[in-house]
Length: 320
Image (cartoon, rainbow, N blue to C red):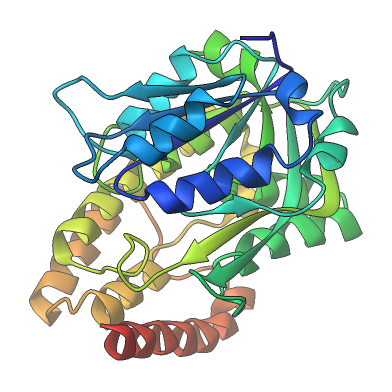
């Protein structure tokens, strides 16, 4: 393999056609083969893999690795991918997503950047269609607020609330030098990775260009809501809060205004928690020192949260 500047890590499970589309979105410019190395880590797929194997055999600087560990999951696969990346920069992608046009030109602008992370705008679409979805709205709002007003408050919000792995170029040495890894759990495996990464990040840059398209499907983990997932996510939320409280400066922590009222509301609306279960989580969060309500100035946003969770519940019901 040619020594590349940018490494892309892709966990894969039973989505051969989608990951082929993703690879084509990376290598649609011949310059990409010298600039980008890609590691696809297959997570014990049960589908026929021969089309993907043939595709990768014909692509320079692309490697297919099979997860041979006793564990499964995107976190496991991303950690395997990290071990096999040698490039200066890291980009994470999910197998059913893809990059927007002109990827090479967008990332070439930042190859020699001194920043630890470069944030890009993203977009989301319903999988297999051009219909715009909602998975990019929050991260884009974090980015756009910082671009408009690059104050320390908005920088903290951008760094610490961007918990998804995609949409960023990350300096590899920050990850490997601080031994930052993904949690090897079913859901939310990226939250603590992104939290620890932000805590070790000193300098950031931003781009207004759209780098990445994240897809939304009614059968994905992001739309499949169950109580086991809620429990896992709740404990990750607590771990994140405690890590931030104990490991970052007060001036960075204060703007985050972490509270659990919104999360508890989502549990009742999207995960069908009973009142008894909701109260048990209420006690759990309070026991760990997390506030129920945000600052008074933010309480008005709760009506928007109610609307968003109802819309998400309707989507779940209508799409299966």
